[in-house]
Image (tube, rainbow, N blue to C red; front, side, top):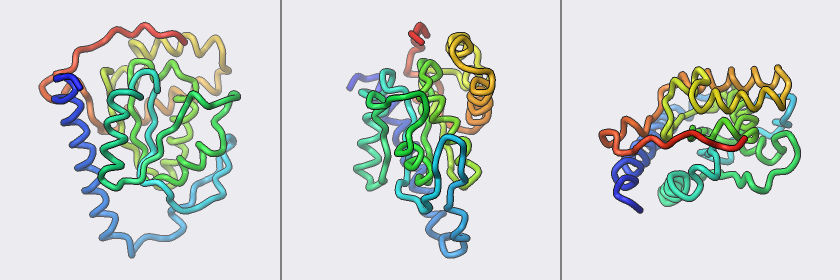
Length: 214
């Protein structure tokens, strides 16, 4: 692990773990007062959410080729070491044009979604299908924690910079309704308070360019 990651990524992971453990404590103290029905997921067009309950504490959403072998891998292992039951998808195994039922179920059965917005996140149709499903689940008590990994939160929120480039490609291949749904999801989650790697460890990370294949 290089020095930049130890300083920036390591501190960021510690901050995420602290937030999760603080939330665990809060949830435990309030657990007896929750309505059991609040854990049930609402149905969407793309996902059968008939199953209730929460099987995972954390669902990780990320672009595999950007962060799987670095930040996401370190975060995933840190979560497991702390006993936090975490779902990490293998996007390489996906087939078809829509989010599959197993992935939908994992989203709806999670308490928290950590979304790692990287330079290439919006270039992946799978990430965007996943993000839209997560936003749907926010209505049924799913908590979302965004991480802005080498990207400006305003680029995510407003689809500028690399995210604008991604949507130029999507607009050629997807219908307007789907594209607008993705933009709305990015705007909503991009507006949430999260962690920005550029402002962690005094800006240890350097910005990379944003040339990706669609």
